[in-house]
Length: 225
Image 1 (cartoon, rainbow, N blue to C red):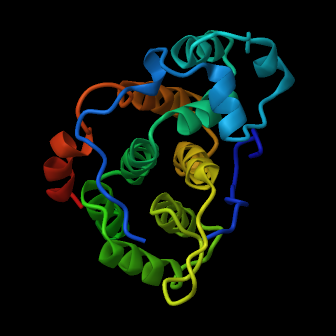
Image 2: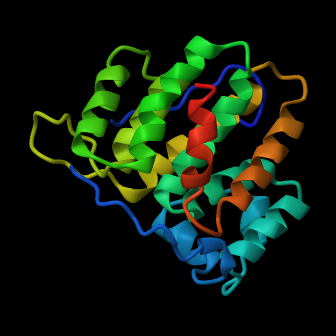
Image 3: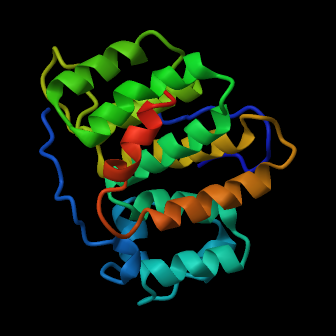
């Protein structure tokens, strides 16, 4: 899905309803309730041959992800984790990675995260429309274009709000999320991107369990965004 070499990267899945909030406690998909094979099939994942060799019939999502990390198949691990997480958690993962990549010296850029953070915490039609407006103001293949498209797709639609509803395939937002984590990894340049990507993978893994992570992080992020 994405080039594995460092450098400039664009999201190549160009697709831009009210969404009821999910429960604060969700069944974490990396604790064995869904097999990795089921996730790959449902989300139409295209993994490398080396990753597919790790995919046995009944391996859990948690164990498959661990296998990918052990084999240092980080690009496959990134795609799989984005697919295995609930959609808002996958999107939150990409937000945290971008927030980290921007650093403290890019306040104006980090302000662009606010509408996405607000929608993740409180999904609404108004929030989606606000994100859609921002999407129209940036390049579609830029990091921000990908983030806004990911959010819009996470809301369940790809059609513009003024047109008849066209539902977003469930894999759309997750593919964007995987691309965004990569973009965050290479945002400061190619040097050290593998270490950053590995750190973001471990961060994403930590989001699979427990209460909605944005409920405990949103306030601290708002103080710096």
